[in-house]
Length: 293
View (cartoon, rainbow, N blue to C red):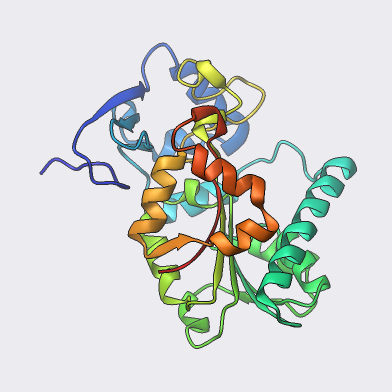
């Protein structure tokens, strides 16, 4: 049976990228340079590697994906471009994160709100959240990243590897920062997180925006690697390429709706972009704040 778009289920799509003789060398170079040759090891047939584009919501996705175990192993083998962020970069990121969390805390109106950081990585969000009195739960499937996060952030952060462990908790904020693009089934994960939410839970999502990606018009031609930086649709790290339309369909089908009140008071520019981005491509945004329907 022919499968449709994993986001909107539309049955019309096209192959926009495929692994062939023109880019195979760059794929092998990426594998060797960033994953210790592991991409080649888990790819059974190069002809299987292709990216599809939905004609309805413009979502991009890999037609074939490694299994969950292979994906986790891939992340554990990844060689970072830098062992740690430069001080200026980390300072800039920290200021942005702190500002985001303070705004959300004001809106939630609790002294000690509860945060679930889904896909917490090395723990930058969790450490800052803890410093401003959030009760923090960090979910990270990569054992290597989780171990590193525990080493760095060993102060009163609850590390979990099963969402069922917090099923009975009151979750005030769920943060999904640059995570959905990595997941084989982002819609399924959003539906699972909906079960952890109540009508007052705020869900913050940010994913790379294909409409404003760094590759621009060379998005397809520059895949999979330019020998310098990771591609917006790099195999098999970014399994999904979101547009504002496909992200909207994702959260709507998962049972969420925009948190208009929060955005009106705290993120008015983002709200304007969400409304106008449906009609003006240059204004599209893939940062959204949600509440349960």
